[in-house]
Amino acid sequence: MKNLISERVADFIKNFPPFNVLDSKSLQLLSEQILIIYKEKNSVIFTVEEEQHKHFYLVHKGAVILSNPASNNILDYCDEGDIFGLRPLIANENYKLEARAHEECILYGIPIELFRPIAKQNEEVSLFLMESFASNTRNPYSKNQKGQLYGIEGEENPNKEVKIPDLQLASYSKKLISCSPRTTIQKAAELMSEKQIGSVLVISKDLPIGIITDKDFRNKVISGKLPISGSVTSIMSSPVITYPKKLSITQAQMAMMKSNISHLVITEDGTPNTKALGILSKHDVMVSLGDNPAVLVKAIKRADKFKKIKELRKSVMMLLSGYLEQNIPLGLIAKIISELNDTCTKQVVEISLAKMKNPPPVKFAWLALGSQGRSEQLLHTDQDNALVFEDVPDESLPKTTTYFLKLSKNITKGLNKIGYEYCPAEMMASNPKWCLSLQEWKNKLSYWISNPGPNEVLMSSIFFDYSLAFGERHLLDQMSEHIFKTVEKYPIFLVHLANGALQSPSPTGFFRQFVVEQDGQHKDFFDVKSRALRPLIDAARVLILSHSIKGISNTWERYEKLAELEPNNNELYLACSYATKALLKFRTRQGLLHHDSGRFIELEQLTKQEKMKLKRTFKAIKEIQELITLRFKVANILG
Image (cartoon, rainbow, N blue to C red; front, side, top):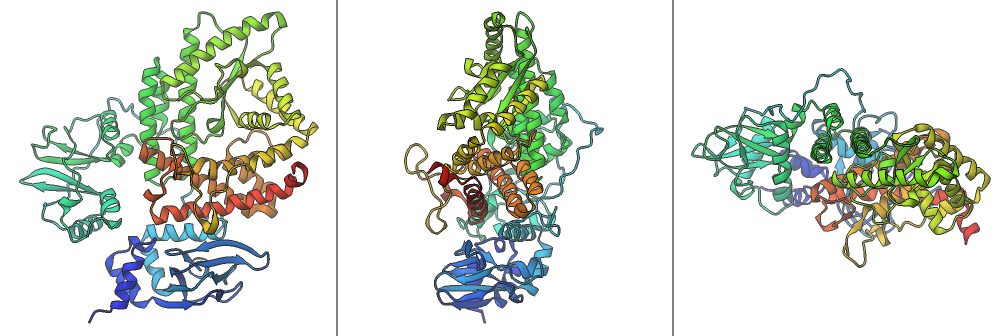
């Protein structure tokens, strides 16, 4: 006789992470042992230092508040589908927070002893639980869990031999796993799980008619759109994209990007009308490249035309997509992609210099500003840059400025040709306001810092996130030295900078609801840049500047340095570092998915798990803004 209660429990929990990745057997076993608990409004579920329960909890109906009674701070709200109380499962410790019913609740108690072996056997479940626990404790860098969340960042092997990808043949998988059109979705899923593969080819009369990938299961079955009992023809991608076996890596990359797919079918003559020989996946392309960006760096440095660099930047985006799919740590991804972006910029400068009739009259430096200056520019966005040249006698200044303005216009035009849009506000070196001698820059910086109106604070905040993209480092160092000396002289500037850091709108409104755009082109979309990333970026900038720390412009590296400088705020700063990387990774994934900057997110298109991950970063935003308000006494001085 069927257990109707356990079936209803299974039907509910299978929609939420981490239970949505469990196989049917594990799901049923778990559902039969889950405890159903009713809690009245304001009733306590567990308290601080209470001994471990035998269950962790999933909210079925209602909402739960997690708080710290000592500080009277509400740290999180958990609503339908959220899990909490993971400490006994992960850390084997008594509770550090209080959980209380915000309203009438029905909770599912998940037996820890039953669930622990399931989690150990499923890497995706384990990763999700670790991330949830780390986020809730605000410290994903605890010694016990370090390296288990996203992996330890390893060093590149500089001696590893690589090949140029434009002529190298792609290596594809010849071990074909296929099924017939009559196969059920469930059988195909079991086959993929058994063989540990990411795709199955659908064959009819010995010819390939379709392909099923992990993405098809996520988008069409797990989402609830189609039943698992249906045939594979209802979810397969058809017709298949086919190519002959003599396919170069570059051709494969371009084919995948053109059709927005991750698998190509290799056939005898390159058409669907002959027998399939194998499958080439995006992962195979990454393996063929050796997972080493050195091949791209060499190719970029050899490029003598902007058009060639533009083509290579497509390969950079393919590399970025592959790294994200492999869940490589964001910090390492950012270092690699930033180095490739900087190499592109340097080559554009080199080509532009070669087009000038005369060599530069004096030494200069090309500065990357904004996200590129912070080594956080992963997607193609607009350009923010500046040029500084050595001081010259007054009578030589107009002629020298004219030369560097012409050079800057050639460079910004070249950057535009390789994929960087022009800055709408013209914060580029081609603008005379951003192409100055060292002394002129010092004068401008002094004015911004000593007269901190809203516009001056905006200008200076953009300019403080810079890095050397090309040229003489000593010019950048002298500018940095001048900035710190001037800030020491005018400490009120930090208060205005702190006030600017608090102007970013809150990411959530009442009861943790996302605050979306109210009008305009992106009405009802969530602005992940302005409401989530910018508050963290602005806060890190003013805090690191207040410590007079030079040479660190990257946001998460700034927070990690702050954690060293202020041990009492260690947890908060590391939580901000984690949140910044998580948000940037999320934005990058969205940008690659929708072929845009990833800034504006359509919430209806996100899964429950994605929304949960976003919301977990918002606690750090709220707390860092509270710290800035108290430290710089913004309300008292400016109010």
